[in-house]
Image (cartoon, rainbow, N blue to C red; front, side):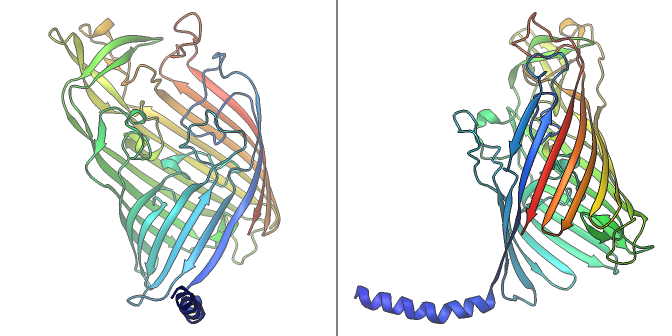
Length: 464
C-alpha cells in the first residue's frame, strides 16, 4: 500500500510540477551589505531619532565606538501567480537579519536572527491595485538615499511597515489615490509584546486609517531618485487612529520645570480617548533634469514635511514620551495628584539634494528635523512644586528636538555593486537640563540639555 502511494505521488508530481511552473514564477532578489561605523558617542547603529543621543556630559555615552555589521543584508522572493478576475497576482516576502525585538542579553556577538520585513500579496488591474499583508506604509514612500538607512525617520521612513489592506486607484492619467486600513500601534510596535513592554494603560479599538493623493508628471525632464530617472511629483498623505488610555492608572511620574525633574505620585483622572493623527506632504523636483536614462550632470530635490500628535505611532517619538500629564487636582482620599493625559505634538521633515557627477559617481546631502511644540514650563501654584506638567514614566526624558545632517559620496561602477562614504552629525535637544540617569552622581546630574554625535560610515552593497 505504501509503495503504491509513493508511486502515485511521484507520478502526480511529474504531472503537476510542470503545470505549476507555468502558472507561478519565482524571482530571488536582495543585497549583501557590509557596514563599518565609527561614532563619537555610544549610539544605536541605525541612528534612529529615538532612542536619542545621550547628553554630552553623560559619562555612560561619552566615548567613541567602532562597529562592523552585515546584519542589514536582505533577501526577498517575488512570486508571480496566475491571473484572477482579470488581475495579475503577485506575492512578495522579504527578510533581513536585524531582529530588534529579541533581548540581546546572552545572545552571542554577531549571531544575528531572521526578521520578516514584508509579507504581502496584491491583485493588479490596469489602473487599480488591491494589496493585503505586511508592507511599507504609504507614509514611507519618500526615503532619503543615505548609506545609513536610519536617516531622518520622517514618519518612520524607512521602518514603518504594517499589516494592512490597501486599495490604490489611478485616475486622470497623472493622479493616484489610495486608502488603507492598517493595524493600530499601541504604545510600542508589536501588539503581541508582553504587557510590561507596552505603554501602560494604552490600547486601540480602531484600525489605523491611512490615505494619500499623488500627482506625478514629466513636466520638464526627470531627476535622479535612488539611481533611476523620476519625474516631478507631489504627494499629500494622512493617518489617524484613536487610542484608549485606561482610567485610575497610577504612575511614579516626574514633573519638569526649567532645569530638573521632580518626582511625583501621579494618577490619570479617568479613562480617556485620544486621537493620534499625522499629515504630511512631499515634493520631488528635478532641478537640472535629464531627458534620457543618463543621470550625469543632474540635480534633484526631495523634501517631505509632517505635523501630528502622538507620534510614537509613526516612529517619530518614544513610547513613554509621546504623551504627558497635565495636573488637575490633588485627591486627599487617594493621596495622588490627578492628571489628564495629552498627546505630544511634533512637526518635522527633511530636504535632500542629489547631484550626479557621472553615472557612477554622485553626492547626496540631507538635512532632517523633528521638533516638539505646544508644551511649555507653565506653572500652577496648586500643582506639586508649582509644576503643571508631568511625564507618564519615572524614567521618561522627553525630547524637544532632533536634527540630522548627512553628506555621502557614492560610487556605483556596475549595477551589482555600490559603495558609499558618509559623514553624519546628529543633535538631540531636551526639555530639561538634568537627565534621569540613575547611575550619575550627584543625583540629578549630568547637567546638560543636549547631546550630539559624529559618525563616519563606509558601506558596500552587492545586489542580486
